[in-house]
Amino acid sequence: QVQLVESGGGLVQPGGSLRLSCAASGSIFSMSTMGWYRQAPGKQRELVATITPGSVTNYADSVKGRFTISRDNAKNTVYLQMNSLQPEDTAVYYCKLTVQIFARRDYWGQGTQVTVSS
Image (cartoon, rainbow, N blue to C red; front, top):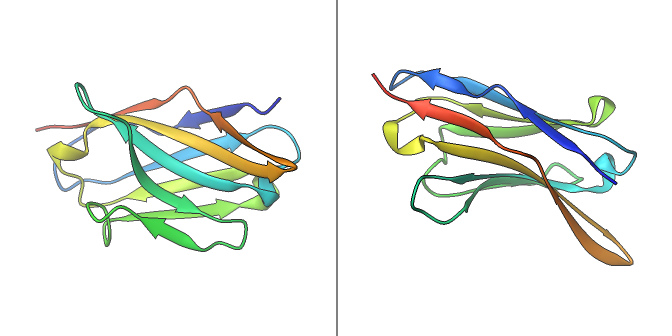
């Protein structure tokens, strides 16, 4: 069983920065696609960014140029560097691990709150 633990959320002023971290247990991290998703109050959960085992990245249009996803396989950790934060970035941010070994499996973290407000 894989466990994901997010950290790094908090309150930040508009224009500020935060870095989220997601640490994974187990031995499948390096072969997994990692993703960050977010859910704002009253809205559906949406994709923010993903990174493949080969470090190919993909971003939602709303965060391109402001957010950067990266991974450290030695630490079983994925990061989300968020710059130029805006109030519309306020949400609970979730980490997801996707692995395909015979069958696809998805694992989710518990989420971390990011609030952008003056």
